[in-house]
Amino acid sequence: MTAGWSFARLPTAATIGTVAIPEMISRGYERRFVYGLLAAGGTLGILIPPSIPMIVYGFVTEQSVIALFLAGIGPGILLVVLFIAFAMIHARWFGGYRSEPAASVDERLRSSLRALPSVVLAVFVIGVIYSGIATPTEAAAIGFAVALVITGVVLRSLSWQGLKEAAYDSMVTTVAILLIVAGAKVFGKAITLYRLPQEISMFIGQNIDTPLAFILVVSVVLLIMGLVFEALSMVLIMTPVLLPAAMALGFDPIWFGVYMVVMVECALITPPVGLNLYVIQSVAKSSLSDVSRGVLPFLALMLLSVAILYIWTDLALYIPFKF
Image (tube, rainbow, N blue to C red):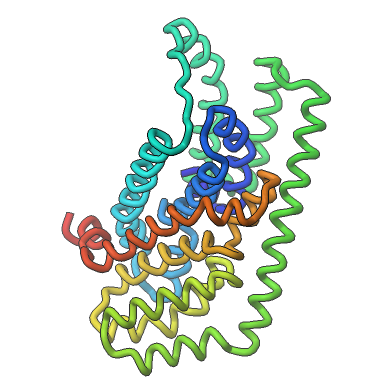
């Protein structure tokens, strides 16, 4: 959900991962499971309005962005349910999770009151973004300034040394993310100059004439393209060529948009070079093989959701057109 609010998937994976990885491992969760959960969970924001890839898809195809947002609700809920179910099963029987003693009512009340300023700040930042009062960047600056006041003056939980350490860690994480994105952009630009994505898309549109074969081939191509392209680049490059062929085979353009977004999610965590994998590896200071192994069950669940979406098209189309 944080990715949906912040408009950014890679920074979200880094931010949540920095906090959640050490805490979850200290509670007994298996390392690879933690890495996979956070890498896959960081992609879910693509389906949560305001989804930038859906906005771009709607602009390119002249489809209703509101309908796309509504169509993403069903698949988004399905993915969340699948992830939660797998996480509970894994933690209960395979993860070595250690239960903690329940907190008393007084402890819960004190913790809730202490967390209240941060909750109010989060709601305020989200509100100014959605109301159009401030851009996400401006809202982030306001939130940072107010957070300094809350932690340094109100709660007195942040020292000057702690601020310097947080600034340094943020700098290291940000540089790592930007280097990953820059490398992907350069490599993707080189491939685009050779028109490989366009040629592949044209070949699919001209030679695949059954719906199931079309979806299978497009899925494989999108996964491969996702190894070198960022989400928006994939949507901009592939959609204009693939959508006419999809509509000729009877696919609804809104459904196809949701399908493409889910496949983009899959591409972001596909080993060995999914972008989210590198972000989690950088934050966790772990090996890429551990992150890749941990993400495989979640990738399988996402591909399962694509199969369900293909079989049950109303999963995406019921809310925007029949509800």
